[in-house]
Each structure stands twice: as structure tokens, then as C-alpha cells.
Amino acid sequence: MLNSCSTTPNKPAAQKDSLLAKTIVFPYSLRVLDGNVFHSFDRFLTIDEGKSKIISIIDGTCSACIINQMNKLDSVFSNILIDSDNIMVFVLNVSKQDSTFFMRNLQPSINAKGFILWDNNFNFERENNLFTPDINLRTFMVNPENRIIQYGNPLMHPDVIWEYKAKLENNM
Image 1 (spheres, rainbow, N blue to C red):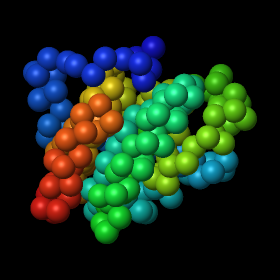
Image 2: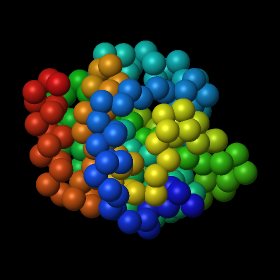
Image 3: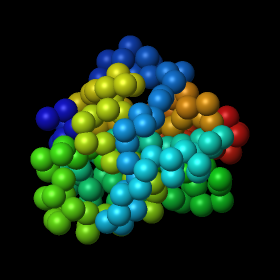
């Protein structure tokens, strides 16, 4: 599947460069997952306005993706977001047929403190043309206007965290 966390972190430079300055939209069909409770997308809209966001797309049917990507990315990014008004957002892909399995078996392993947006039909990736098997391109930062200004997964390439930090400190 395209969103498996076992995919390779390398893509041609042309595809990577096409991400920069791309404007992201958040489909209204997304839901906010807070613990084991779902909220309407409006809850996210009231908090996200005017903020930079670090976004990571996560395969919600993969326990390793939850533990080794989502929880670890949240921990890494929380260190640079701690004195900031900016937010961490996880887009969690879980199909409708896998929802019950996820809530019973995988949701309890989530330790991430960032916003979790539930996507049960790949709407975020489809509307933003972000389908890629490259795990390095599935984590990126957008400015307050939702334009991508940085991408890369610090778990795959640890030095990229300093680029994220510099963008946050420069207030974009």
C-alpha cells in the first residue's frame, strides 16, 4: 500500500521540489480524533487559523507506523514546537472497514499530543495530490497560508529537524 511505513525514503529531486510552495487544503470530510472520541472538523479550524503546521501522513492500519512514526515524530517535533504557537498535525489514514480494528487495537498505542485528523478515504492526499510511497515526503511544514515551506522526515534524515527549527524561528 502507498502509505506503508516500510517504503523507501528516496525520490527524484523534481518530485520533491514540486512540493515546495504547494498550497495544502484540509478537506471538510476529515474528523478530529481526540482519544477515542471523534469531533467535527470545525474544532480543528478554530485552532489552526493563522498558524504554521507540521503535518505528517500516517498509515493508521500499521502498528509500526503508529509507534515508530507517529509517536516518535510527535516527540521529536514537540521539542521545537514547545515555545511556539504552531501545531503538529497527523493525518491518520484508516479505511472505514478498518475503523473498528483500529479503535480497539491501535488507538490505545497513540501517545502523540498533536492534532489527529481522521481520514477514512485518503481525501487529504487525493485533494492535495500527495500520494507517494516515499516516507520522507509524507512529513512537511506549511506556513499560515498552508503553503509547503519544508519537507522531510527527521526520523529518516535527522539533520532536517534543524531546517524545520530555522523556519519556525524565522517566522516564515
